[in-house]
Image 1: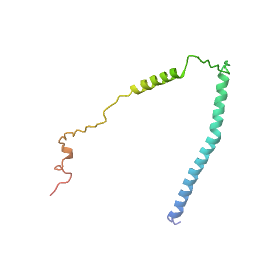
Image 2 (image 1 turned 90 degrees about the vertical axis):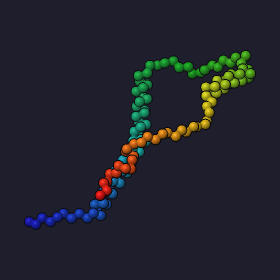
Image 3 (image 1 turned 60 degrees about the horizontal axis):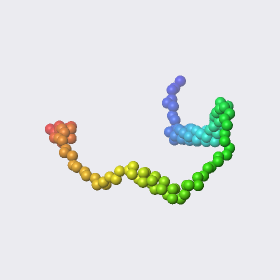
Image 4 (image 1 turned 60 degrees about the vertical axis):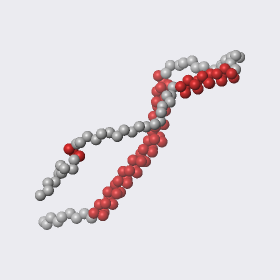
Length: 122
């Protein structure tokens, strides 16, 4: 028997690699889309169901009664708003916006010196 070398066409090999890569990318995108559309809501519903099973019944108020004071006027609201405005504005320091740049002294380093070359001249 004569052993002939196996000849593979490089263009057809490139098409196989292209098709395989495209299949992997698009199938993973489809799987992720299905998971986020169907899987995540199902997991959230299961989490809510488990959370509600472990929770004891609590009394919840259905209505909230707002009591208003007759002494609370617009002047009182303005005084409170002014005090809050002044308090929150005083927390920030007013700093000078001038930048001073000082030139640093450059130290001599033999690593950056050009007299030590990597090539010897003959």
